[in-house]
Length: 248
Image (cartoon, rainbow, N blue to C red; front, side):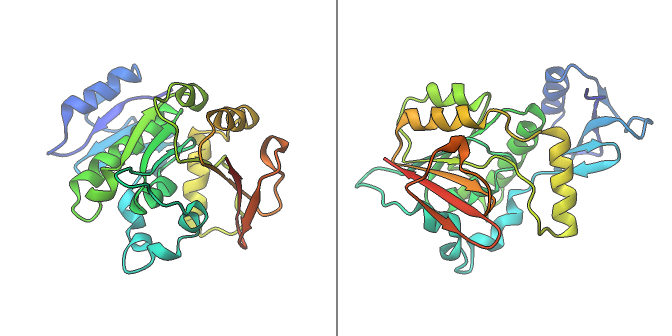
């Protein structure tokens, strides 16, 4: 339950705040609820945050800038695993079926893909949409963010409704990673509060396979089982992650 949408300070898009309040069937507030366990959106000039039981979380795509600038992009393992070449006059297209806060989609978009991001959780989608809007207003992230398109809903249904065959489908079911910074752990814990791990992983993999993209990449923990018991064509493993690849 969302206890309200709080408007803080000047320069806030009140019309958008009202639309969010209406969507979550809650009220527009000028100050945070007194209940310390309340869950609410905080809307200020820096964007939208979600507060839950005193913890705050916000989606910020610009936090990934150091990974895609200064020659760092070429070292991103996801892009190395995704490696594809666009045909003449054709843009590579990717679908991120488990968008979350859009980090991997941002990396793919920075690498030249036009990415459709699927997110089923309305709170996460609200924060991600705000992050994309802000990124499109930022000169440093605009070009990349313009290649990101958010679609909210069930990924299986959204895959079935696509009017094109993606070059790449990316799946990253949430799983606990062992080595995290204190800040990352806090963010992950908060994210798990608002969005539980994917409960229909097998069906999602099968829906992706049915579309027959050029490649499906599934992000897994190094010792994790294959999703849906499907053996990939090959895997690329690093210390903290494994990418299972299905090629068609």
